[in-house]
Image 1: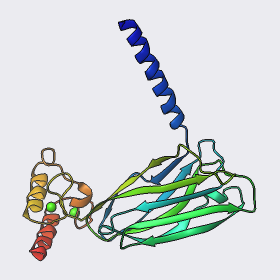
Image 2: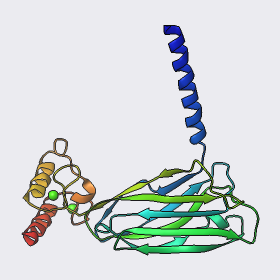
Image 3: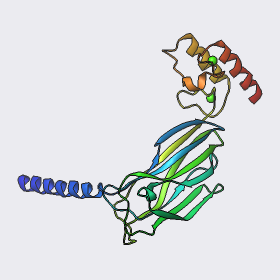
Length: 229
Ligand SMILES: [Ca+2]
Ligand SMILES: [Ca+2]
């Protein structure tokens, strides 16, 4: 009985592995880069990339959700994924809503019966980091169409997370808390005293941007803390 059970379980596992590997073969739509740090007030650009994984793609659409309390869209522009072979394409939908935190995009090839099979950038999105905090960039309603205008199955999605930081926000280590106070000053002093024992995010600790972390940065951070309180 045990042998039969084992055989049965092995068979189940094989079927499971097979079905997973089939599902794993579909095109990949990604928000690139997958993880991004920036300072409050900065702008940055992410790409929506498509790797067809052997499929011929004729059209593509997505929605992308973000946290409008942290990010605001500046622009969404067409990439060259669907025109990589020199054929033409048209944007059917290209809109964003900075109140609810959603972008919508849809594009199709025209004047050809072929699809594209090379990986590339479908669209570029530029955001402004309006606040300290984190926002996921989450793909939704993604459809890739084949040359018969039918949805391609098994599309895989890779989302992204953006972290908006402020200079001097060193405590609590390592992520900070979007607030500058004496805790951050103490962390910086401790780091200067013993950087092995009290590490900091060095990108955020060099407040005066001179390439060194020292007492000048402490003085600057103190002046910021004074402003906040
Ligand atoms: Ca802090
Ligand atoms: Ca410095």
